[in-house]
Amino acid sequence: MGWNKEVHDAAKMAIGRFWSYSCIPFFVARSPYWQQMVDAITICGAGFKAPSESDLRGPILSQMVDDVKKDLDEQRHIWSTKGCTIMTDGWTDRRNRTLLNFLVSSAGGTVFIKSIDASAHCKNATYLCEQIEEVIEDVGEENVVQVVTDNAANYVAAGRLLMERHPSIV
Image 1: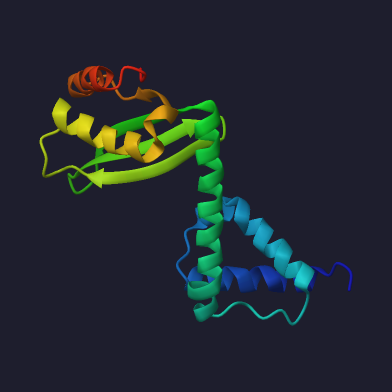
Image 2: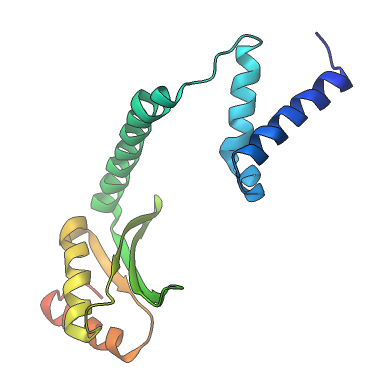
């Protein structure tokens, strides 16, 4: 069909109307998947039928979950061959909850493992050590080379406890 300014402007306005109607934050346009989606629709051409709500929450979501599991399995393989680092940090959200985040970093990249609400607990060395040990068990102690935390006194003390219990981990 060739490039036509009016057609392109109409397409952009259709996107803008969808964006505004759906209350999608503008920063979403920075997602690497945004242009990939537009390109994939363009390749399909006129008449492409967008997935329904049922498609999105059913088979498409299931496929995305399977893809994430496959990626995590690949990461776990890297952890077992090259080792990994567990990283943790605590912070307080706007509702004054203390949250602890756990990530695993390796040659394959960084993976978010979990976040827990620790508001109801005393964030002493023993509690922090127990939480980190759960992640160590999930990742596999034989795969963990080191644990990185912030330098608050309770984390330093938790680090000492971890090194006593797991001499191979720094």
